[in-house]
Image (cartoon, rainbow, N blue to C red; front, top):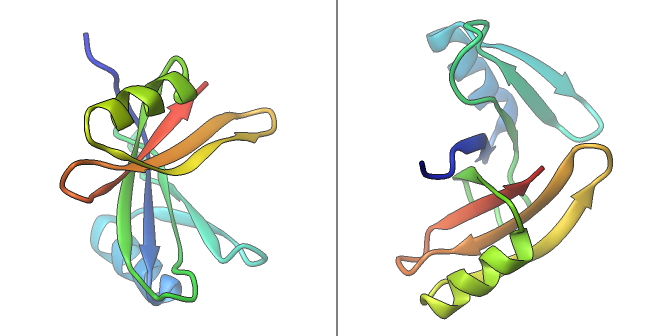
Amino acid sequence: MGKPIAWFDLTSKDAAKSRAFYSDIFGWKIDVDPQMNYGMVDTGAGEGIPGGIGQADESGKAALVMYIVVDDAEATLKQIEAQGGERLTPPYDIPGIGVMATFKDPDGLQVGLWQR
């Protein structure tokens, strides 16, 4: 069986507007951390992929990134680079939760890795 998607991260030019949009349309509850301007999405359905909606950085670039579960983020990044992908963010620890990293696939799409 393949590796599942563990998380989605929607980065918006106007995070508050995006959170209201998705909440209104899909009925999602979104708990916003004002310090980070990031909202944790609760679909309320007990199924699907969890995620969050945050503010774009200074570039203002909106994006939607999915995070795929892997056993070893560093080893997976090496495989990605060998297959024509590009490392964007090296593995970094989120204390008590896991390890994240990001890369670009051969088409230039940003994708994330999630190591538990």
